[in-house]
Length: 106
Image (cartoon, rainbow, N blue to C red; front, side, top):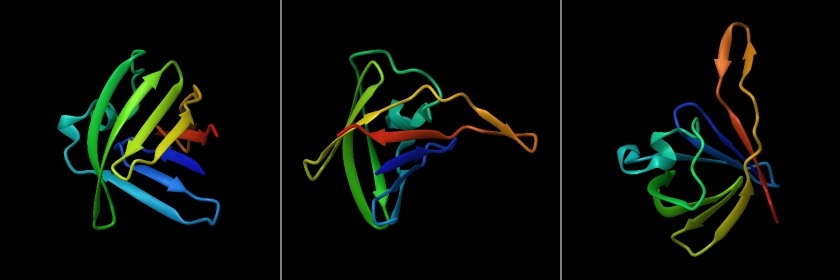
């Protein structure tokens, strides 16, 4: 699986079956996870929580950041461990794209 966060803070999950899920924040002001849109480093041992939607379904999760390892815990109890590589912003056609790629750690 891979995860991409765009500059607006929307998260896209691409599964092994090439199914793409979009998670859009419903209350970005309540969460560093989306408020920062992943553009700033999150200090180690920092917690953030938020609510996102997958189509019509609301998902509550918490984010735990330890170095470049992030853990996303969904309301279903599923925990995703992801490595956040330090990817520089790319500049294509004069536009800055602030996309971050996430790779499932396990």
